[in-house]
Length: 300
Ligand SMILES: *[C@@H]1O[C@H](CO)[C@@H](O)[C@H](O)[C@H]1NC(C)=O
Ligand SMILES: *[C@@H]1O[C@H](CO)[C@@H](O)[C@H](O)[C@H]1NC(C)=O
Image (cartoon, rainbow, N blue to C red):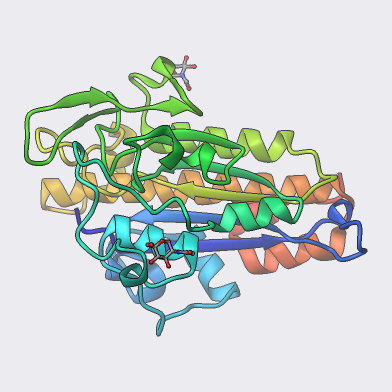
C-alpha cells in the first residue's frame, strides 16, 4: 500500500496552442509510476533493472532529489492535485480503503479544473484513489474531461478486479468515464493505459493545449492472491535476477519504462513534429528520450 511515486513531467509546447491572449500554453503530461523503488532507476544508481527512457528524461530534465512526497497513495495524490499539504485537506491518514465512504473534499479546486478554466483539454488515465463513494468524487466530476482507469488503490493487472484490503469484497474496477469497461478484461494494465495515452495524444486537436495525468498501476502490487504480475516476455528479460519475485517486479517495472515512457514520449514528439515546430521538437529530443525517439523522422 506504500505509494512512493516517481513523477515524470513532459512540458511540450506547440505553436498551435497559442492562447487567445497570444501566450503559448505548454501541453503538460504527468506520468506517475506507483511504488517504484527509489534505487530501482538507473539515474539513482541501479544497474539491475535498466530504465533508459526514464534516465534520459531525468538527465536531460531536472531531477528533484530534495523534494519529498507523502509515502502513501491517497495523501500524495491529494497533495499533487491540490498543491496543499494533506493535513490541510483531512487527507493525511492512510489511504481510502475500499469500502470507506470518504474522499478528497469537494470544496477544493483541483489542478485540472484550473487548467480547464485556462482552455486546456484534460485527461486522467489509470489510478484515482481519491474517493468514489458518490459520483461527485470521481475524476470526470473533478476537472477531467475523460478518465479511463480504476477508482481504487490497486487491482489485478489482468482481471482488473480489486480485493478489499481487510474485508472480503471483490469487484471489477475498470471504467471509461462513468461506464464500466469490460473490454479491459484479460489485458495488462500498463499496455491498456499506454494505448489510451498514445491514442489521446494522436487524436488531440492542437487548437487547445492538453493536460494528461497518466497514473500507472505498475509497479504497485496487485491483489494479495497474486501481487506480482508482469507479461512473460518482460520477465524473461531478467533471467539474471535470482529471486523469482524480484524478477517479476523487474518485468512490471520495465514495462513502465520501456513501453509507457517510450511510447508516450514518442507520440508526443510525433504530435509536435506534426505541428511543424522543429526547434521545440528538438528540445523534446534533448529533454526527453533515448535512441528510440531520436530515430523518429522529425520533419514530417
Ligand atoms: C473546505 O472545507 C473545509 C471544512 O469546512 C475547510 O477547512 C477548508 O478550508 C475548505 N477549503 C476551501 C478551499 O475552501
Ligand atoms: C486485449 O488484447 C487482445 C489480444 O491482444 C486484443 O485483441 C484486444 O483488442 C485488447 N483489448 C483492448 C481493450 O486493448
